[in-house]
Length: 476
Image (cartoon, rainbow, N blue to C red; front, side):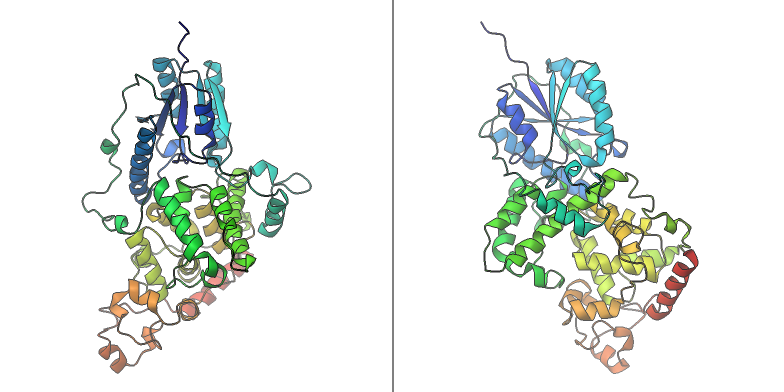
């Protein structure tokens, strides 16, 4: 009687999907029984979630993944602890000798050390590419160095050709007859309870691979045709909203890239613009690999001496959407209500915190990490440094958004503001972005009492701008 094939382990991380999952496909192709697991490592391990909002998503995404595995004959086990310790224990309990995983680039150094430890214990680790369009080590300057400017990075990435074709999900997964005791996901406490501030998330989002697939299909059919021209207008909301699914690995950038290939309205610029956004994500990961402290240290050390000024009351007003600038407040309230913020608003609200309030960009990065469903170790940090002027290929610090003019340009009818700042919903178009300039009779007619039902501006933008520029000049 032939000996039973020992099982193999698939370690799920930021790849909570079955389709286009190179590690899972390779494990299934061995013909061995598959033990699929997820490890809750904690922040020290560099794993998910980043914050409470992402914990909500992670809970539901793991439920969806477990069901998808069940439907194909597999299962998903849950463990808490330091990754190497957990994996060695599972190997000892099951007789497995091989571990399959997809690279998680924000923790490459940790993974190399983990692989060394496992190899010394006689355990082989097979790591696969798939979380980015191309392996970052393949996108290099002529001198073999990482790019620090996006445009040449984008050209080099295009020169590599199309990303690989996505893999199909396995039709069946051979499970194991006996598994180690698994923790219960429901006992991890990932969901908020008192209060349940995420109560409305389920009306907007569908975590999991199936939800990602529907979101991508809907975007290609209904949003991509206007993406380049309309993505900056938050009231229209024609962006892909794929970012939470990408952050959790429920869809890959290669899947999104190739899905766009099926779109054709005679304007290839729409596809190119969307693909540039996918490439921007790759670029940010290349920065993170080169500079692992991207979320805590200025990329440009010239900013190390910048004279930040923290005021707790101003910071709370910004977080709560009570700055007196309607477009800023709408963005911050969308963030709290939906765990998401339109990309144009991310730039506006970040600029306001950093340059109007002179609060360190790291405080903003931390709040977004806590509240965004799509919190991402590369995109979040790199984007905040981009606005602050301290990052690679960054917007210069002296580019300071005027929140009133930004609102009038990108939300000209005020529909976005009215959606998220209902106390201003009856204010007419002329004053919707500048209620602080509206005559008393206009405010009275709209039911607004400045300083009571809606705040006056917490800073005067012109004055704040001059203060920020003076601080920047002093730093230089």
